[in-house]
Length: 358
Ligand code: ADP
Ligand code: MG
Image 1 (tube, rainbow, N blue to C red):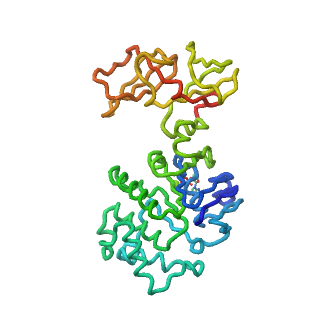
Image 2: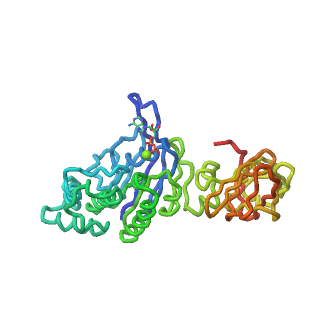
Image 3: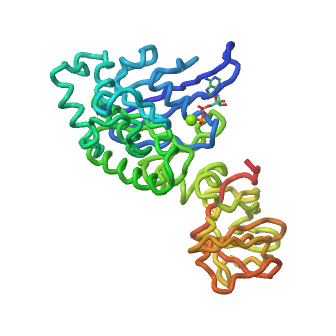
């Protein structure tokens, strides 16, 4: 079983290495783990993946695949499978030839070399795994986008890699195909429990659904890392709280055993922040209710969005905007209506420090 380890890895682009795309990344993907690298566009996710694949050289730090330091090795000697957003199949080769190509290109250790005789069986096995066995003789142009991406995955799996690198593999697909492919990837991972997967995405739903752990990236740096539940329920940074799940972030003042927001006293656990400081209260929109309840705040409706099964209400409270996602209302409030919002004490988390607007 092989994992991936980044040890203080920095990557810079530009002739003089003047733009840092990855800043001192320390991260371990355990053997058999699915780690999502989640972050906005330009945060350095692809760069991190390319450092594992060997397409960029770090300016400092080391990359390990299993126990092996691969930092200086060319890509084809690293024994990795990689799938990128654009299907990147060869248009003039049939599906089976595309998958076989990856096998022929391997020039790694003896264990990864595949004899000519073995290739058809390996190709068949990989296509079987991705449900594409019936399409072996087609050309890429005769396949849908989702099918092409399955072939790309088959090609990556054919070498029986210890680690699989996926860079936004679903982002070129439409929404319905995407959720089907997500389920497929989860199944593949169950069938290949020893393969470590590094999964790059800007889509929090993909990360929350698929990953054992999520590494949150922002501006070339790792900001947070934890299981989906940890990051969602108890984010450690404002960036995570707003990027994963779009949380409400409200400035509060913490006293001895008390938390106040504007003129209101709130009931919230204060075990994470020292008293006498300003802090940020984080509460998820779907955990904010309308009407009387604990931690009630009076406000004015600033915007109402109908989203089918739910209404998203924007409520101005003391000059701060609170988002509430509630079950579709028969009588939705109107702009300017006065409402009360509330949330349960256990549904809120305090983050040390004031709201920075990050
Ligand atoms: P992400 O995958 O999170 O969108 P990238 O790793 O692709 O981010 O890019 C991180 C930063 O590095 C961005 O600012 C991007 O513009 C820059 N960058 C990426 N590739 C190159 C390159 N080949 N040359 C110069 N700058 C690059
Ligand atoms: Mg990218």
